[in-house]
Length: 200
Image (cartoon, rainbow, N blue to C red; front, side, top):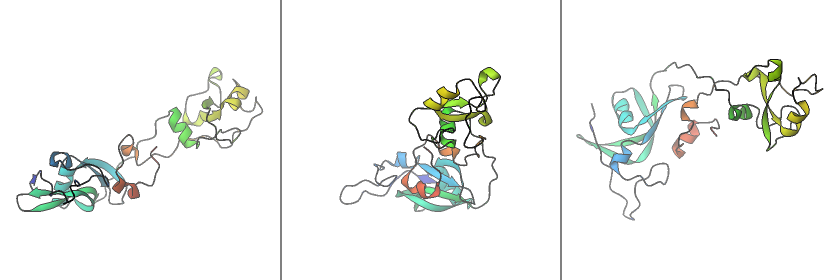
């Protein structure tokens, strides 16, 4: 098994340090060994984020293949190895995708920041309960939509039928996001081609 010794290759002659994420300031070997590595399933769907140290071990044991690397080398007792930035498992891991949590942000994302009554993109979006809470409407994906302030005020505490308004689409729970593990993380430039979904 490869035993990693935390060292990086010497900096270029112009004094620029080896970089992480396409131009950062990655030169400290103690930082490089802990740098994040995107772990892809056999089908290229992200399943985890680990450290460079862990990724090197997985590649060395034949559990994963190296796809992209950080700039910098890690020295072992027998030589130097690349510092992985992205690895891909050589077997398929079956993992259930977590459902999205109901929140204002997630409703706006599902509804594409568009009022579900008038169809306009608005800066003053609010949440509207299709069947009002005072009529025992549930706080669920199927009963909550994005609405502009004007439409929300017009609808008030009525159902769409009572307010003579029409929903553009029937609300439903969005599909699970396979990239949920990457939310609230810094996305490295090298990872972006493997992450087609918008994580914002």
